[in-house]
Length: 105
Image (cartoon, rainbow, N blue to C red; front, side, top):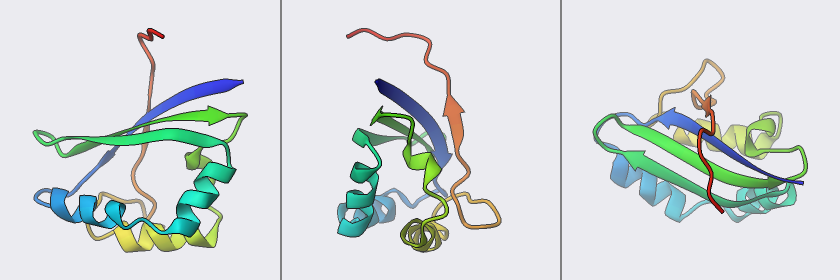
């Protein structure tokens, strides 16, 4: 079964270039892990007016990138990104799931 999942996160003001730079050099072990979990067709968009990041991904099976928080690679990535994003106490990004209200294939 294929699912779509969307969520929002928050970038600190003025850090779009740094966010893009870090994702342009995303660690291969992180992308491999995300793919292995069944996540694919994954994009993140930025609303510059509000510094809101919108993530959209497709998933095979029940897993999502939001389920990998126990993995040391993910925790290291969170630590790496914590200075440019709004985060929780464990450095995970504040992430809010979004409800799908329309879909057209």
